[in-house]
Image (cartoon, rainbow, N blue to C red; front, side):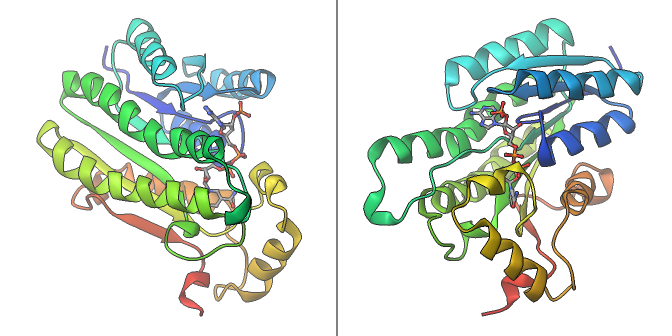
Length: 249
Ligand SMILES: NC(=O)c1ccc[n+]([C@@H]2O[C@H](COP(=O)([O-])OP(=O)(O)OC[C@H]3O[C@@H](n4cnc5c(N)ncnc54)[C@H](OP(=O)(O)O)[C@@H]3O)[C@@H](O)[C@H]2O)c1
């Protein structure tokens, strides 16, 4: 059992899919997780198998702690270990503050914040069996600045970043490194849920100091750096990958 294993939540498409494929290329066996899009998840699994790696596909809504526990049970039965956990799955209700309801808050915070805590607990139990591991979460600029209609998602990502700091301290004795990557707008399917998608894309294209929008691979490159040995003294940080757009007023 020396073959290393990586779990990427929400890896049926977008940034999660690209991260899963990159980790497979780097030689990891992969756990693909999704909530609804089974056929996309199975296609990603086929791509990973074509790279010669083993893959486990788990349907689990990470907003539900019992589903999280069942997913880790499956991982333990299939692989008996876990080395990397990328907390990527996200969802959320995009509404102005006066239109937000209690279930919008619960749905968003459960998937985007609570899932990190309870996945990290289960991941840590598996990781410590083999001497440690690495956890990276994906956040967004709405955690630190105002974005239209983004209140609950922004708050959920702020909680995720705070939790990243707490996990980094308490999991360090288990030799588990915990960090996050926060991105500017990336043109994935997620943006189709933004009422102001066109405006957001236009702004990112025109105003990003680096001269172009952030692409999926920019996010994956930073995730891979935080999963590498080169970054082992970076703990509890959220690294912003936005081409400099958050530096503007
Ligand atoms: N796109 C951006 O502009 C941007 C910018 C900064 C940060 N981010 C962050 O990057 C991450 C990935 O975003 P993306 O743009 O790649 O999103 P995406 O294309 O919408 O993909 C989201 C993934 O998460 C899964 N998912 C959603 N709810 C889930 C749940 N409850 N349980 C398990 N899986 C679930 C989806 O699978 P199903 O379809 O099966 O539900 C899908 O695989 C997110 O954390 C997002 O906040 C995105």
